[in-house]
Image 1 (cartoon, rainbow, N blue to C red):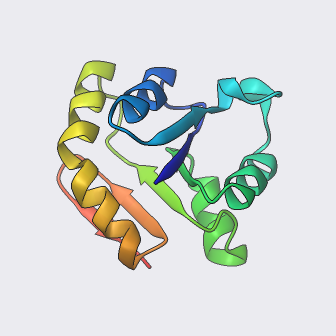
Image 2 (cartoon, rainbow, N blue to C red):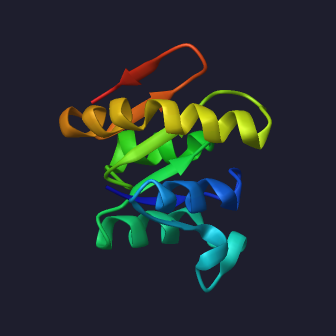
Length: 117
């Protein structure tokens, strides 16, 4: 799996995903850094077959209406410390990987993982 982590999430999440053996970049790694538009993030993710990881519901709307980005992981944990977020991802990576075998829009909250489609 390949991930593009959006600006609302910490850069260290992309680093942690790389440590776990996945290809991952953060919007700060893009030429426009955290000022990269949602449309450009979606375009890059789709061209590179990446999953956009974000807290931004604008990506959900765009995905549902236009299938852009094609794959999205919405993090709806609320504000939690980075250490807790990283532990949470480590703990659920296998489930996330399996969810994207069946779906293109996955939501991860503190209590559940939902595969929307």
